[in-house]
Image (tube, rainbow, N blue to C red; front, top):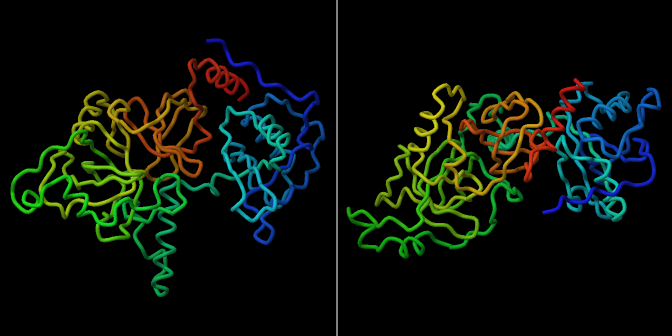
Length: 382
């Protein structure tokens, strides 16, 4: 198969003056992104190349706009670039399309492509503190909700355990399927386990295609036939419909399907990593293959996971900053199984797993030569 043709470059020499940059969030009153005012640096610093990747554009932009009142610090590794296309009229976030540009992407070419298509693009510099991990965001929503429900209780008086269940936002891409496929779980259970079996002590038949799951995102039940889910909970998946799983709690991870249907319930499938063998077996297998494992959570090898994913490579070192995250070293091979709000759930070959900012991971094509060249270039420039 022939290589993809190179991207056509505009004939002009690019300058950061030619691109709309902003920080943070749109103005609440208009939904627009106010342009940044340039600092008093050498104007030559605004000249860049169309082929410059994100990790070169960020420090150049920070240097140019360092006198902006929204400028936080001069460590470019604390920033990401989001590319936004805002349809007119711009009504805050409703009419915007937002993508996170990985460190190996070419933001100026992406901007120009959207500009040529009259998509009204903006390149937004965001500090990593403004892009919380899915777990941190879930925790904050929970504390906010509890404070609103009980005003006399300060948020800081609550426990900070990540494993506490939380609702998944309706718009979250992590949880697919906003509508429940069946109004009542009983109607589905009757097609799986006959009533006489479910009420007695006889073991129900093992379902064809039964699989297993471990939770990587919390969920709180909104209906009686749903289950609360905490990060790290283990389950047997007994059925699935339209973005939802019917699961049975599996406290030991042994994968046994029991007769107590009170342990069964609906959960959005985006909360889980789906595994082909019982969770306890998958963890034991990973521990045996990596005796020196030092991660903060039980490892699971990528080959044990049957959720859809794609291969990736760590473009830079990343040191975990919160719970349920994972450390990366530049060049680490990973497999990404979930992407949510500019974060990715990555599993390394050792079975270490957790959330990392998506811009730290590059997709691996048929060959990793491009990513290898990028990492070599980055290493030589630092």
